[in-house]
Length: 109
Image (cartoon, rainbow, N blue to C red; front, side, top):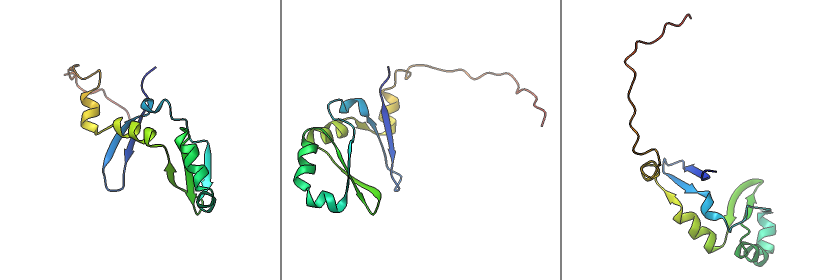
């Protein structure tokens, strides 16, 4: 099976590509906290994050932030690259394609 890749594009136009396979020891988010609850039980939120369980926190019902261990964060950062680097590392990098010289086909509209 191929790698699981996440492409993130921000509002400012910046982008990064993250190989989610690099987070194998970090479990998926299984706990969602409302901001007030997360503030009241911050130690519990951090303890779960340190154990490899990223914690999602919502504000006014919308997803706001994720608290994760430094290990998960470093793996996430290490797995990121820009779009040019991503395509330059592609196994298809050396392939060349030739464009067909045929005329386009007729289509009834």
